[in-house]
Amino acid sequence: MLASSSIRHGATVAAVVLLAAAVAAARAKNECHSGDKAALLAIMSTLGSNASSFQSWTPNTPCCDWTNVFCTNVSSTSPYTARRVIGLSLQDDDVLAGPFPGAAIARLTALEQLLMINVPGVKGTIPHDLTRLNATLSFVDISSTGISGQMPSFLSEITALGHLRLSTNKLTGPIPASLGDMPNLYFLDLSNNRLTGTLPRLLFSKSKTSDEYSEKYLYLSHNKLTGRVPPEFATVNFWGLDLSHNGFTGDASLLFGVNKTLDYLNLSHNVFGFNFSAVQLPVNLDGLDLSHNRIYGDIPDQVVNLTVTYLNVSCNRLTGVVPTGGTMFWFDASCFQHNKGLCGTPLPPCKH
Image (cartoon, rainbow, N blue to C red; front, side):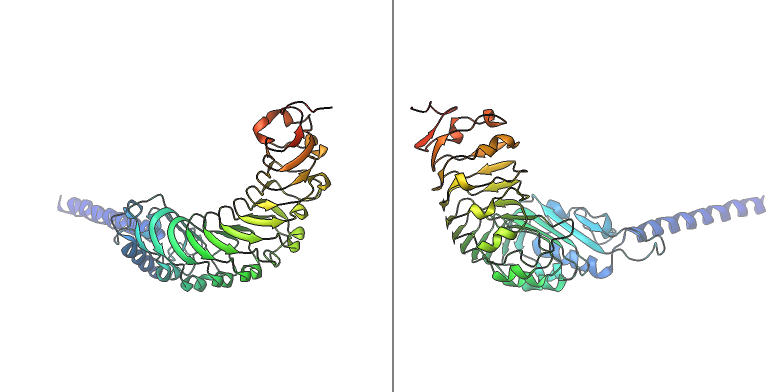
């Protein structure tokens, strides 16, 4: 009996040891680098531990299990190697508040993606510390926050950066010309800020043109920008371009062309003036807003051959007959109104 009891006790102990080892192994697989964990806890300390974004961030739990934290995959060859934090996403949290934790974020030395969206309590300026992530940080979205100050020129030092959105903040000053030096930049959204000055002449000029991000996206609406569209923009392979609600002037026809890849173009609420009759529309054009400018001439007949789903040319100086056919029947009079020389369906008939 004693021997049997000892065997059962030994088996129980062995099972407990194995279970503990399994739990420890599972925990180890979800633990991140100790430096990364310390950096994340510093971010939480700066922005408030009571925020819902940090509910799972407790020191005694593996940080790769924390919400809003994204880590490298478990290595098949070294399964117990500490995983690195490569993504941080803090979104839609009104409680989260404090100065932008740039120094702590920069300690996440493998970070590739940073998202801070709709967190109005985060204030201050974008610090130079982020340039310490110049070789890894490729995706930044800091939008709808309380961030203010001049648009930082040092962002060009983050050479890995391809996607940069800083929309709906309180950024001021000009768009730095240094952004034109960024080799991987393909997406730039600075809309809804307080930016002034002109468009950098060489923006996207050094960006890659032969990879999957060869198409460029530029969104600058609702700022206080002025001047003309640089002639260098004629060679940029834009897919989406929004310059609306600024003070731009001059000829923007260089943005058009039958061979352009442009899918969406919004030039509305500026002071652009050019002959629309002379424009060749991109064959892939899906959305076009030219309203509230000083554009003259006729609407190109080519528009009926495109699958345009959004069109607004109202409040200009256009003349002639509104083309019919294709998807033009989708657009009501509001899309063409306030052009004194324009007539025909859906506007009143032309006078002969």
